[in-house]
Image (cartoon, rainbow, N blue to C red; front, side, top):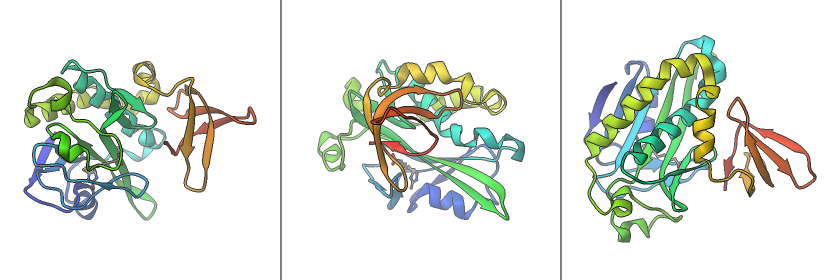
Length: 239
Ligand code: BTN
């Protein structure tokens, strides 16, 4: 993957969006100092120090692969988990693409699609990873959070982590574009921490409570709601 390094930027996702025409397919934009990071559900992504990862992957798949676009975050989520596992920890996935260790968030993904005249210009997968953060800084985050250095008791080489992650992602990417979520379904499910549990899913217009039954072949969440109706959710976030 090509890399674009920015010493400081408000948001790597915003930069990627604004420069989408100039950035080639398969590029990672990353910075050491992100001053206005954005998260899902209109949240902010806090700057937690220069030794953490703030990056956006730019992908420009062909128009014929529309069905799998929304699953690309899940591919990144799985490869992030597999990278963490190389450091001896056991990450878990909160649907669709939060990564937690011992119930605390260590990484999040913000996916955005850029279109013009109904044509896809590119998909931006922004990800933040707490690699080397102090406990004091983690406490300032608005939800329970952890960092890899704290989990394993030593500092992490940022460049090495990013290389491991991108090589895992690239290995699977082409096949994933053809086969879709099914390619990773079992590996994804193995790491899911919400299956068979009662969950609340936030949709744009409402929250739904129910039992998370399964992840379908398309990566959707199969939920049995309070009235025993089966809901297949392709969007939303488990709270
Ligand atoms: C979330 O869990 O809410 C998603 C967080 C995504 C944060 C990353 S950091 C790099 C990229 N640029 C942004 O502004 N956000 C993403």
